Amino acid sequence: MRYVAAIDQGTTSSRCILFDREGKIAGVAQREHDQIFPKPGWVEHDPETLWRNTEFVLGAVLDEAGITAADIAAVGVTNQRETTVVWERDTGRPVHNAIVWQDTRTDRLCTELAGTSGAARYAERTGLPLSTYFSGPKVRWILDTVPGARERAEAGELCFGTVDSWLLWKLTGRHITDVTNASRTLLMDLRALAWDERICAEIGVPIAILPEIRSSSEIYAEIGAGPLAGVPVAGILGDQQAAMFGQACLAPGEAKNTYGTGNFMLLNTGTTPVFSEHGLLTTVCYRLGEQPPVYALEGSIAVTGALVQWFRDNLGIISAAAEIEDLARTVDDNGGAYIVPAFSGLFAPRWRPDARGVIAGLTRFVTKAHLARAILESTAFQTREVMDAMRADAEARSLDLEATALKVDGGMVENDLLMQFQADILDLPVVRPQVNETTALGAAYAAGLAVGYWSGTDDIRANWTADKTWTPTMSAAERDSRLGDWNKAVERTYNWAD
Ligand SMILES: Nc1ncnc2c1ncn2[C@@H]1O[C@H](COP(=O)(O)OP(=O)(O)OP(=O)(O)O)[C@@H](O)[C@H]1O
Ligand SMILES: [Mg+2]
Image 1 (spheres, rainbow, N blue to C red):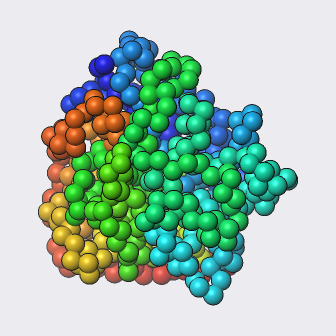
Image 2: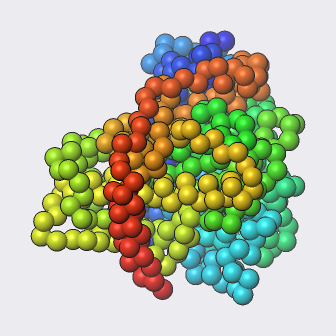
Image 3: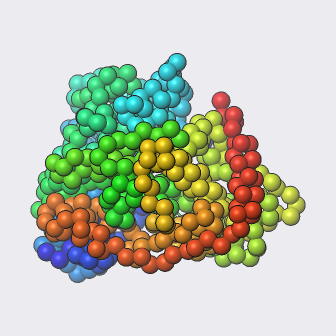
């Protein structure tokens, strides 16, 4: 067996990537899908398209590499998290489009559920604030909205799953999920790693529609049909947890930051869950086989790369994401403009569902090039806020946060200007690994470990190598002044949505 295959079903595209024993890429196939925006604040995907594209990239990557299923030791699945699919158990037909993690349609529902206890009502048991971000309220919305859905759910005729579950169902006919994805639903007890019946009842999600919760690395089932028929699926990890694995953040204190549609910084906290006092989430990082689970603190930022896409698609100022760097380089700074992309409210560390996006500091001087800079800078500023929260939590818990450099990955880290600005604003070196597809790599590792393709996590550490490091050069005075302006801009996003 020469390779392990990873399916990476993301927010914007589906990928299949082949990895060899050194963790090097041996083949890639990718296909984008449409983002469906039915109303302001609503974001959907067509689940059948997600599956069709996944099937397509599976076949395409084998063709590209000139290999067959016999060359693949195992398949790992990683996915956009929280995005919610409900389908018919009999026919496999979705009863509604997938409601994407960025979707804010459940905001009123979340406020109602919070009641007098506030957004932290379930935080102690789930590690999460009540937010539109998570799956539980999205399931409730579908069951409340689709005619007959609640009765059918209670009768066991419907299945709920995050995208991992949906793909596993299509690939193997099993209705399962892993601990990392389950930890993003607001329905799982973080310590017991089981559905919390009381919370499920209060949010209004019948137990009968929930998948079985399994570990992140074990043989679940063989693929039933298609180009990979007979190959075992042996790893499932939510995309950000997979990136932790791909970055070899396998010991307490190790952290990474992924720059994709949004940004997600995770800090490994070991086998006990640590609860944040600074706006971070507590989540399952991974569980290997029967070993104890490993937990993480997470700072989730909803909009980073998505703002670059907005600049491209909604404003039409650039025609490809990478062009933003050339445009931004035509000016020396942001010209006084700050963009705060609170498109889905603000996630970590502020958690402000009432916030909406602003461009602050506009004068006649500001050009599209300054805006391009402001867009890239907003990613760096938001990351700095999350990093400050991580540091504060780590300090309060005497966790030894590895503070020599920040490991980064994802589509945006190809942007040299952004990465230099990031190092400057963090006042910390930023380091990119040779294999930047850490999400897919992590899913491959989880699957490969379960079937013995890799012998243990030492192999993963040995495979990690640095590619490029950016070191800070900005003066403290300039950094402080910019952070001050950024803060003023963020405050102007508050109290917009009712
Ligand atoms: N050179 C670049 N400069 C700035 N942003 C970029 C650049 N290249 C890609 N991006 C942004 O990075 C994001 C894509 O990164 P990546 O493929 O890691 O995203 P992702 O979040 O994994 O996608 P998915 O959500 O599908 O998983 C897009 O939002 C895109 O706008
Ligand atoms: Mg991704």
